[in-house]
Length: 478
Image 1 (spheres, one colour):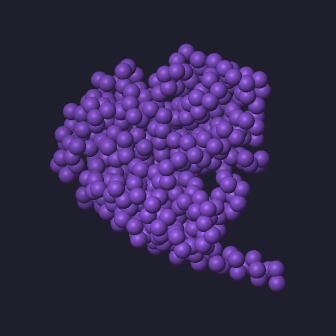
Image 2: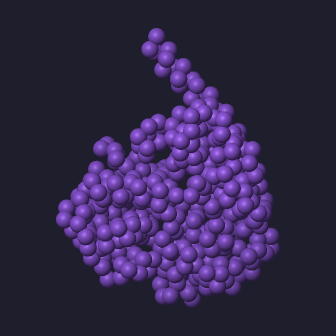
């Protein structure tokens, strides 16, 4: 019967996904290997997540990737001495089945394709990380760092610094990490150690430290040394203010999760992270909007050339606005955020040139805050140096999202039904909505979605790794 055929097919996929899970877990815990399917991470993925990741391959290559076709590659990977890298078994499997007829050469093929990962398999010392501030970005960074808990994890969250310390504060902080109205429940277990002022999340022991100034903490008394301090407060944005962190014992480098002032480098991971040198002790990860638009602008400028343009950001409201009408020092932001669209300024357009100098003076920008709690959109209205059309621009950006060095920053959707809430939890800096693309002559308008919280936090983690010399090899190349 037809019904039995579909049920049996589902049962087979489910069982194969279940069989993959322990292999995926061991590959990461023991070897530091993160497995992906066309950029979709399988670390801590449920059986349904694994099945869905395989289904999405059809959007990339036109055909489904069956779990029975990819499982031999996960199995072969588990037998190789590959360490500390990302391996896209989806791309490996698709390429293999296009050129081979059976499974007999899978292990030899994998050994050849992943030879660079075997050579890369040197031991790396773990690096300490401290989150200074624990708001929206701080808690999401904590989730991202904790999800990689294991002996092979080289980016270890060791502490959180907070102001205050009133009775019940620790439990409330832990509760906010457990439950999130936008991003859902924490994936794991969280315990509170009141006696030692600590939170234990999935085996990660996080010291909670109370301080009123960046320079009054002695991290070494908690066993934290040469730490990267990630400042999520937004209070200090220049070298003088952020430099206070470096006066604390145990702190070695500082990363700001906001645009910086002065001569501090503003880094958009995937675009200009190679500008970071060993001597850079203070770095900025720029803004969520700058991270969303810069990779797309770089790709388009490389291909077509950009004469000039305007960036309009349709941005979810943030904690800086008022819930109900009340005094605010900034224009319009005092009006109720959940009830109004609010025109405000953005420095993202100008900030692009700090990461992409060739865009200096070419962009204007403005922003409209809208009554949604997360996920934003940037509309790029551009004058190009060469002719373009919708089909050509979309095909170029599709290939960029799949195969270029920006593939971890740019995602691409062809859905005619996608809306903002569908992008909650997106790990990309920006997602090109191809159905909305307009291009004719030397004019192009692009619509780029971005999770201004989670997607940005993923970009921040990339900058953290670069600052600490933890460069992740992605295989296969290209």
